[in-house]
Length: 448
Image (cartoon, rainbow, N blue to C red):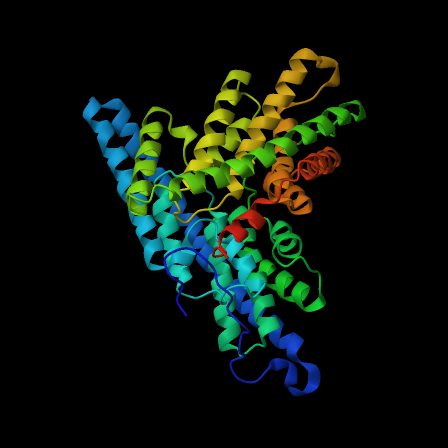
């Protein structure tokens, strides 16, 4: 049953198994059968998500060339990238009109499907998310590639499960497993993708789920490596372990980022409600206005728009001044949620990792200027800030720590990362701030 274009979710009722339930098949070989389907799901997810990342890399290169051409010529050239971004984002939002489930991150919709609150993920999401995500992220919207890859992976897993005549519980397990495979490919982080399934998506750790997830994730990352290579997302030199005397500072950073995470989540919801409240304007027009604004910012400062991978790499280098880090933090803090409010395909993970890096680098750099004896590195502060802000916003601390460890190929900072994540959880919980995807999932429910 196709969802209406109001973005709401409705109870789907029990999911009917299509054909024979694999649990009823003789010999108890359904575990092996599930593993085979997970391999197939991993292969397809790795191929699709890898091609998606590759297409975004090409789009980012083209956008950079267009912005450079506009800056170096007469002023009328500025209109070209602005109009290009506006049209691309408008088309991305038009895709959502045709396939409403493709809106936004999609993580919350995958979670709702696994809780049987909505219909299982449709295969129609795959082309919608691929094309819409390419248009939106390629235009420079401050969104993450992981939202589309998670939902594309989930759609592949659900389709394979249906065609493989899995029982409803196992279909949901395979959907969760390939969703985690999509995240793993987005960040080249297999362990992070697996933990994402257990800690955030399924909130469970069962044998069949573990089998399907590990199989799908490993296969997807191996296949995507043939397209993307096997290098970590960020190139960071070897980091020494932080001294014990610096740990209280990281605990303080965690407490601050916990508060910031609650505020960030509320800003995301506030802007979603504000943009949706402008009912006289079609959603495609609102998206075009936001896209045009992003394009205009990109002409003046191209590094400040997009998913933020190159900017995050620059912050991790530790060479940016405190004033610039403050500017990055301010702009990305507001512009990321504004882009998300447009309703185009795109995730929240990558933008919030950049916000965390800027905040952590600014905190560590400021503290080093005041108390140099603590010997806190801005690069270490940025790395810890990434995982800590993720924990504060998503409320999945182990996923955040492991994701950042894999993305940076650093293990020396695990202790301050865990300590800061615990502090962030403490302050966010004391403020009664719900995790962002719980709130987004609740927003999908129709008013009672």
